[in-house]
Length: 342
Image (tube, rainbow, N blue to C red; front, side):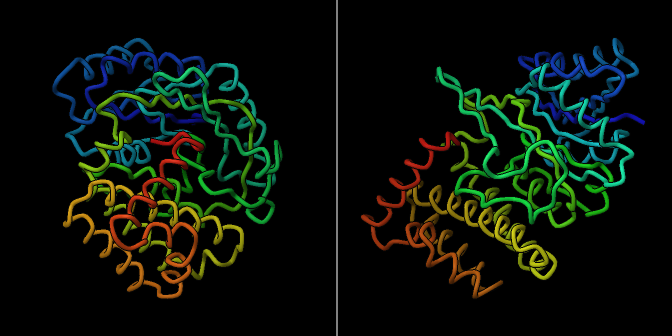
């Protein structure tokens, strides 16, 4: 059995996937790389995947499937992983070797111990096109460092400072046991990936190293704002699924006050992003969708709705009239500059 499985979803990724894969190979025989070709047709992605599988047969596996989107590729990775732990690395991202070796060393030291590690967290770096200074997302003032801990040991997470897909390595069995299955043909499912497994996570470990390099800046990238607006219905689907999950599992989540607070705040951030994108589109149809989204939250949990609606973010996102919508967008743009998202 491998120590760590990397799933690398690829869709017409020939221009950049080699950099990603080459950055993972130094893990050697401890790791497994699943290159998941998600129905690529416009370039040499399938051939490149097969090339690496042939060159590194004990490390790399090429999996070819009909196109199902990022979520489908992650599902395939989880189903086929042989590693004790599991991480998704998008094909336009990469990892840094020094930090990588520290991650592997830490996982090795914890396997077989008296306490089972469920989730390892490390830093990630925004490699944003055109910016000289790189934003490092770290958790130094929030999480205990280099020891096992539980949710109750965490400090308060600041707004905009959350555990994203780039930060986490999950125990593979946990992902299977929690029944995680991401929707197909849908973008933004990474929010579900770092949301739904959390009530099953008992023991965490934070390693303060800049492991994952998150490239952001391609015009066609899913987090480009104009692209997000064009795919707003997929963002709203993920948002509603998060509302469903949170309200249906509220009793379990509430067993840990810190976890409940964290998941509620994360949901609030997603509600804010969805609302601002709908406001930014400035069409009557999408403004109605914003109203419908908040009404959906109200139908699932009235108390949660009123708490979010009357909080700083919720009240800002629901100011009346065109002037109110301008204030909402201005507040969002300030957050973008501070936290470097989108």
